[in-house]
Length: 376
Ligand SMILES: Cc1ncc(COP(=O)(O)O)c(C=O)c1O
Image 1 (cartoon, rainbow, N blue to C red):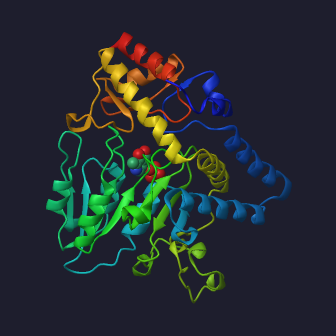
Image 2 (spheres, helix red, strand yellow):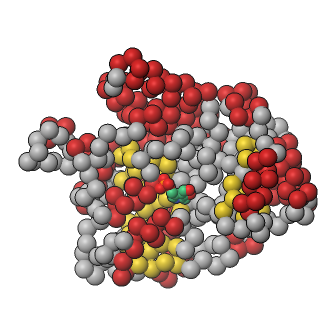
Image 3 (cartoon, protein in one colour):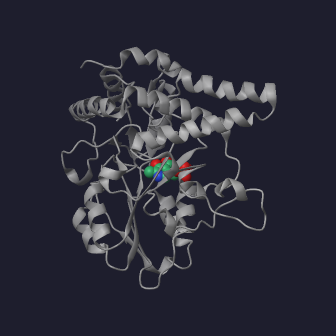
């Protein structure tokens, strides 16, 4: 299989010594990201806090993420984690008696349930859809979303088995019931193209450190400008206000767009990193990345099976998932063993997640599957 991104491999120092297949957890860090971190570090040493430079990088990162998902910069808030963004939305959602239902699935990342169950007003009206063989079907969403639903939360890609959800269909069902669709795109952004407007997504969140190739400390929250006015964040602060009211303790005025979800000074080092990472991704193009990834993932599944590995496919179907989940009774021990062989993968529950990105080659997949088969 031809590797169209061969020339980019030298940008990722880890690839010279390791097989890096852990992008569902932490993507490989590029030289550009490393240089951006150094730029921030240097600015601290030279100026203390260089506000102009820091705010410029923050706005660049906001604009880059907006471009990545087909949104406008004013529709993006820059926060510190996906959990913070979900909590921000949960505590800002207006409570309307009779219209207070939340729908999510048992395959969503646990933080979704943790946050929603902490909301006293909403927690008695949660519908958590039970998955069937790792998948939640559109029929199930149809069954659980009703006229009482205020918000539907759905993962674009399942974090344990790579199942990709049909968001457009869920958006249609949500909107027929006057509910909003909130997408957790942490396992897809940077690898699968996302167009929030075309897909009918009202709210979306993604963190920087997985397929977006940044480091922990940054998550981007999108709220459509058509929906933002109904949200009055309670998790807010001076940076979530209109500039004129930031230093007025008595008269806060929430920012016009999604910035109202921001609170205090963010982790600039992570923002510098995310900005450089997003710039590289936009240069390569996520559509180009996806084309190669489909081929590489298909090969990974076919080769893994040929080597006798049990690969968990959502609902046993043949749709190619966005990562390869290899069954392993003691997945953490297998992860540690592979690490000792300079192979980076990520264990979750009883699977090893083999999660390639555009920088990986078929040869790296072969070597990883061979090693997994050897210890199976
Ligand atoms: C799909 C998904 N959502 C949310 C999270 C949690 O993100 P954070 O630690 O930024 O809150 C993760 C973390 O792995 C994830 O995979």
